[in-house]
Amino acid sequence: RIHRPQRHPARRPALHATPAMALRLAARRSLVAGAGAAAAAALATPRPTACEEKDPPHPPRYPFWIKSIFHAHEIPSVRRGYEVYRQVCATCHSMNQLHFRHLVHMLYPEKRVKEIAATFDVVDGPNDEGEMFTRPGIPVDAFPSPYPNEEAARYANGGALPPDLSVHTTAKHEGLDYIFALLLGYRDPPAGISVRA
Image 1 (cartoon, rainbow, N blue to C red):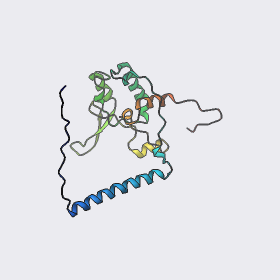
Image 2: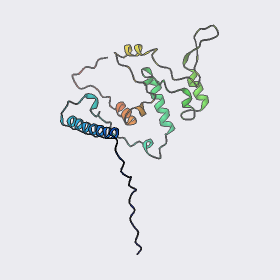
Image 3: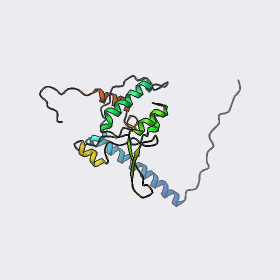
Image 4: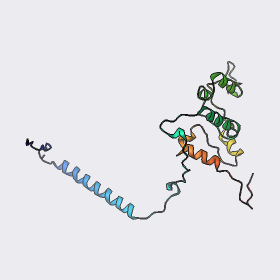
């Protein structure tokens, strides 16, 4: 058995404290003590909970394959999702941060994406005369918004602004489950309750 001496961390030689160092040390100690007392007082005093601090209700966790480590998107499912957006959601919701080019090879071949983009009229310009003009869409254009501005969107929806759906699944907590639960959550109203149009 070999005896190995224990190593002690190198100790700093004691420094002679100057008056300025002593003042800084005292100030640090009083600051730490004051912060600890303030934290203890804050924890001891009950205060009402603000609505923003409450944990919002969470959607059920659905076992989607694309949420796993070995995830992959099924092209037919993604195409159905785009068709639902195009036929239903696009009447109110925008996707300002997505462009038609994002559909290339993820959803459709490039030729089909060009055809889809060309069905939309895009305001472009100015031209050589300084005028804005309308042209058919091309893949580098963003998805057009259903409303010209935020005020028009609020007016058409009773004061509520429909959220932009570009990055909704990543912006919301459990966004994929949230949207799925929201779409499945529509039911007929209970008996005796009329829903405003």
